[in-house]
Amino acid sequence: MYSATQVPIEGEDSAGRVGGVLCERYQVRRVVADGGMGRVYEALDLVEQRNVALKVLHPEVANEEVAVERFKREFEVSAQLSSVHIIDVLDFKPSGDGSYVLVMEFLYGEELRATLKREGHLAPERLVRMLSQVALAMDEAHQKKLVHRDLKPENLFLCQTSDGDMVKVLDFGSVRDNTNNAKKLTVMGTTIGSPFYMPPEQAQGLDSLDGRADVWALGAIAYECLTGQVPFKGVNGPSILLEILTKEPQPPSQVSSTAKIDIPGGVDDALLRALKKMVGLRTTSVGQLADEVGRGYGLEGDHHAWARTTESELGQRIASRLRALMDTTTAVRSRVSATDAFFGEREGLGVSLSPPAPSSPAGAPSSRRGAAPQSGASSGVPSSPTLPMTRRPVWMVAAAALLVGVVLALLII
Image (cartoon, rainbow, N blue to C red; front, top):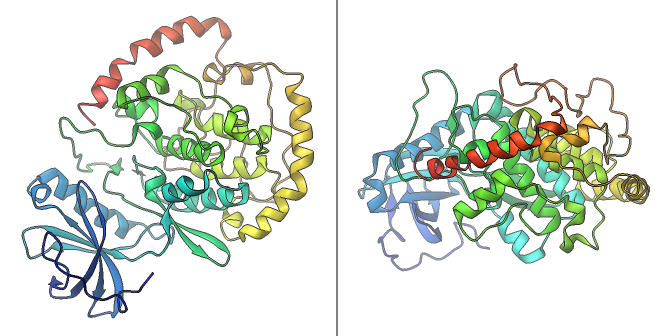
């Protein structure tokens, strides 16, 4: 791939920007991507002498007040967040040709979606490092009561380095700001988020949405990274949301495409806990999710350390423990029949497929349920009560009633 100073200036694109200078500063070199909202260009910053990415709204979108506000919000949110794992948005201003432009750092690499399309799944060490880096980004956002709401493989960008992937979280334009007096952007006929990665409370348009919605989305992404399949399927948005509201995902280890991939019981447990339909039973933070997945693979420490550990080193540590973990998992599964994690029976029966976790270093946060919340959720995050099996019919009726939320989600967020 050429840098901005090497790539030749191409002919005019449909908007006539290639070869010109936007905002009296950015020399547009080429089109990088095109989408429903806008077009992304590679450009040369004539002041800083570095390559940047310019995201410019399409003219018809630039006339929509809400679209412009979301565009502006992406810049404002970036200014609040310091994590190196969030794309740096440098500026927001009118483009000078009737639209608006976001100026961002230019990234070399590819979206996670492209990686999954090519490779099918991620190796355990690559997944643990990715989740750990995303946790550093998202836990900071959640502490500031910012909920991304649109985490998906297209919004996780993998920059390749000699140590492994350097992850960047993209597109905070759909963020929900739960701080007091934050401006709410609501528009009829708009759905925020991809249905494959949308938690039940977001599908229902609940006002109580917090950082645990992003935990669900990351759990679904991790599930797909291991199995090559999304946990909930459907032919369209409503059918996907119907599955999310009424069905329980298979444990990743039992998905057919993972037949030749070793997935320990602790990893199954970690992802199923992140995909709990009841928010109070769900993993409380992305950091906790990353910790539980890593410890499910037998790693010692936590996501703060794993985010900086090379993929090769993580791979060696996982390989040294994996066979013993799988032997333990097989023995446990031979004694325990499958239970419905939706209603918490496994917890109520005291059953876990997780082998004993390695001890954490002194002072390391606990990854077990009941630990202090690490996300931006309020300090009053409810504990994880056990629901008796006799209440299943009530919850099944309730789940059916919540399908009304699917219709609401397609109208109002």
